[in-house]
Length: 216
Image 1: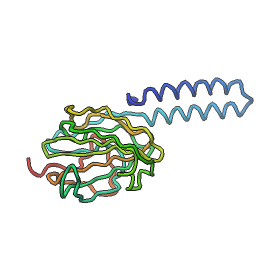
Image 2 (image 1 turned 135 degrees about the vertical axis):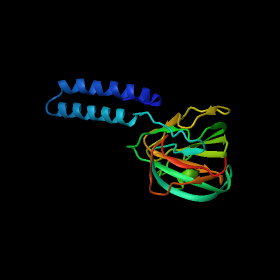
Image 3 (image 1 turned 120 degrees about the vertical axis):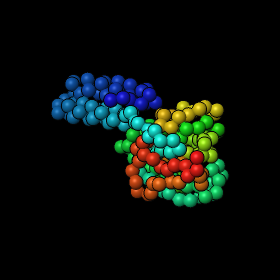
Image 4 (image 1 turned 60 degrees about the vertical axis):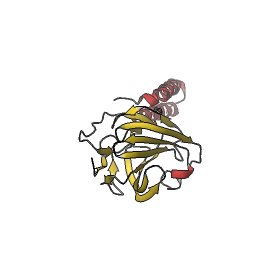
């Protein structure tokens, strides 16, 4: 099982901690020591599971926009967005602690801008978190026009990892970061993109098609 490079440090620290607990459990009174050791092993297994980073195959068809995150679509609405313009479509994907948390580039393009915002830690399914929570907002210049997406931290997730830089060329489906312990990713698509997903759908980062350009 591949471990996300963004989580290597956390996995190593957790492994060391759990090994120490397991060794201590041998010398503690039983059955308490054994219970403690089993709990430590289960915690280590969950940590490995959380930081898993499976390979994904992005669709080859040109002009498609794919999901930047695993999770459930909790919001889809038409908006006048300051970056993507009027009649844009906003899609919000909620990531539970059990989803893969590695985020992927939704569409080929060039990073125009990165904006980090400090903020609150509201529950990620609360739509106020889009504007109120800590987040990293990313704008891409693409063939379909500007595309905006945002990594939003939540009540549990308080660590955003983004490995992008302004001016960087990016490819659809490639890894660019993660949000630790569950949150949401919001994406705004311009009117030139016909969005084909709906609320309630499950998404797989790097594979699920959100929509495609109506004009090439």
